[in-house]
Image (cartoon, rainbow, N blue to C red; front, side, top):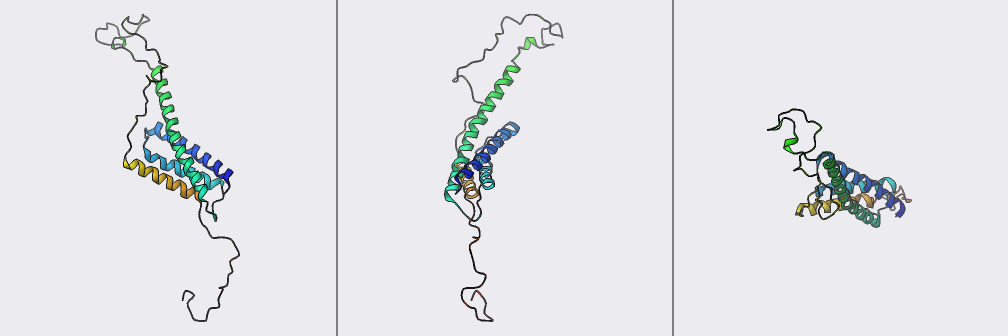
Amino acid sequence: MQFGKTLVGAIIGAALGILLLIGVYLAAGIDKMWMAIPVAILTGLGVRMVAATSGQASYSRGAITVVLAMAAYLGGLAVTRAVANHRAGTVSRANPPRAAADEPGAPGDAKTEPGPEAPPANIQPIAPTTDPTMRRSVVPSQSFSTWDFISLAIAALAAYELGRGSDGVRKDNIGAEPSEPILGGTHPDA
């Protein structure tokens, strides 16, 4: 089965899948359940690249690939949420909200350039909270649908098939001649 090679290949593929999840979320904001399919394919391809899978199908190698692919997807969602929350926190700290009276050219403001004066007394600075219950997740939680479960099933099947390998042609001593003599003029399938 090549347990060590299977594990290394699955971990490499899973890491690439997690990077794909983060990249797709940051680029397009997609965090749908069907993203488990590319993660599973990358995990299975990682196993195929490292372990010799042709000619010897291994059900346990396929099962290990499925478990690691699903763990990579679920762990990747947690990593994506953490990256999104961290990114949202750094953006909100870099651009604090400003009052309308602080804007240049705001109604009731006689000057157009902000000067080095003190901030208005009615605006309080927002202190960052360390209470985890007060934090709001950037990635909204969603309810599961039938399509989500179908996507997970397809992802598991893809990971299993890619990780298991194929029953290729065995390289045993297969004779080139038929085992029984064939009469001349007869079809070999007859």
